[in-house]
Length: 249
Image (cartoon, rainbow, N blue to C red):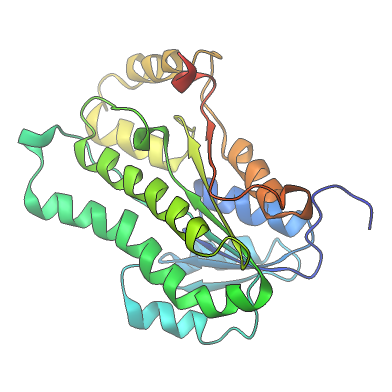
């Protein structure tokens, strides 16, 4: 096969894989030839997506629960690609963020990457695999009213770099840092916090990206595919923004 960025016979696990960036990533990796395991709390949505993709299957997995993670990882004999995509957001500055809310964001966005990656690590070492963590520009710059979210995404960047430093020849670990992406994640935010002024706030989100549009899940998925391919084998420990120029300004 001569197609660029091809992933024939690779086995990939995508957390949060049933919607948004995760679903687009599952589609793109399958299109590249990988056998994709779609891990999500929403098993129905995961199975619906898996039915569209050759060689794909869906599993119910809670990324914050070690037993749930080990049930999935324990069923695998091989893993070449791990995409840690599951995550949540929270609106509020430090004075508005409760201890319980902060703990929840860190548990889903940070602890989950530790737990899933640690469980998958022996398989990834064996295959000289690739880890791609989905971070955010919020890990590199301050975003108003996103105290807990920024803290969590900063940790994602740090964990990515640290793994790459400890295991530079055994596997690769990289992080993608999207700007605002048109996805169920963003639609849920608009509905919860700005249901009376959705289009006004949507326009403000668009304006934040100098390129003049929101990102798409497919924008991010294409970068995931590249990072997991042979063509990207010299990229390790990198944090790659996909933000329409937001953090360049």
